[in-house]
Length: 137
Image 1 (cartoon, one colour):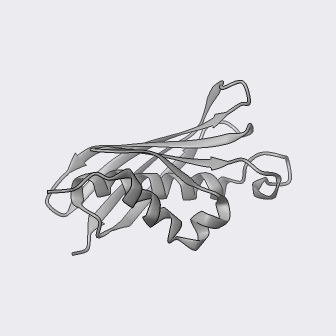
Image 2 (image 1 turned 45 degrees about the horizontal axis):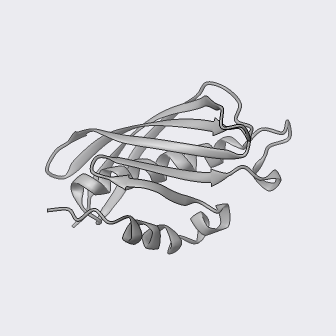
């Protein structure tokens, strides 16, 4: 049985130095679902002023793994992620909303929608990702 606890999820994220560097936060952590938020800062943008694609890929990877952890347990690792960028991301916050679409005994498959959120709260879909996660225990 998997225990759902957002405080523990936040501690796990805080133990990831790269996540701390980006300022990532766990916003939602519930059965089959996780949402991560990353503030959009100047130092995370590419040369054209948009959020760097690597930040979107990081957010998708981590949100997918957290979502899968709600069904597989805490000992999980990403085994693959694909991402399609649909619009440049700009605004104040990136939201990575991941949902489990399949869970087996040792593997989960998740989808993640990535939204750039403007200061007024308007959301723009910036990327769509899919990933698989394996239980390693």
